[in-house]
Amino acid sequence: MENIYLHILTPNKHLKRFFGVDFFMNILTGSNPLFKYYSTTLDANPVYKTGPITFLDEMYDFLETELSNKPKGSIIGIQSNPDIYSGLKSLDRIIELLDKYEMGLYLETNSTKVIKDIPLLKAFSEKRPLLVSVACATTEIKSKLLGDRYLADNGMKIVQKLTNSNILTGTLIKPIIPAVNDGLEDFTKILDMAINAGVDFIYPSLSLKFDSQKIKAFYDIIDIEFPENMVKYHEQFGYKTTWESKNLPELKKNFVIVCKKNKVLYAMKDIINLYKPNLNIQLKLF
Image (tube, rainbow, N blue to C red):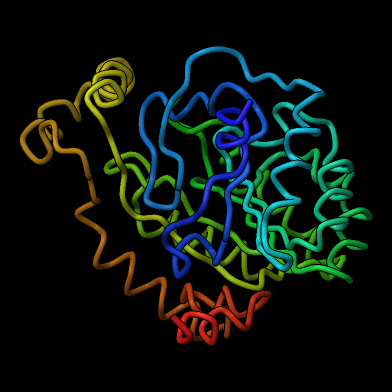
């Protein structure tokens, strides 16, 4: 049973990264299917686990035991491996437990199911710290490496609903795959869409991460969908575990310029301060 607990809440060893999360929650089995091919630098849990995404009701009891032993005020992070709404219709019972033990929540999702939870999240945000991130990666799906949920139109529909309810919400731009969705024009369009949707912050992950199994599966898809990229990838990246687009300097420069011009937060420390302003003070104590 103790091993199960350890897999529900995992400490974040890098408080200045991953949006100030103290403990990551994974209450589901299975993985985001896209993690079979890659992860990004924003994914605290890059592991791909085979099998369907499922949920067992008794996990709520295990979660409560874990939460009861954690410091009050801790931020519990729910990331997208897998997306929490792939296994649950609502976060109602999770929110109830977080409120009971006086915890905050960092939620990453690009499922439209979150829209039905807006009244619940709004009420929670009035008592506890809450930050929501919605990931998107492209304005047009061109590959199996990018699921429909990563379409910008889908993401902005969610963002607009959340920001209209005064819930602190940002856009994550990920994944950026070289020669697939790393064009400046598309990247800038996503920035503009996010700003028009009223985001509180934008944060990109401009690197891909691989292991030996992922990169093989990745190349298999590329060979089918973008065979013209195979030679280019092998020459530029081979079997390296980290990939970055050749457009990276231009993307970064444009990202900062657009965010500054529109007064949208883009630095991790400033994003964390949106809902966890005492983090930097706490760090100085140790």
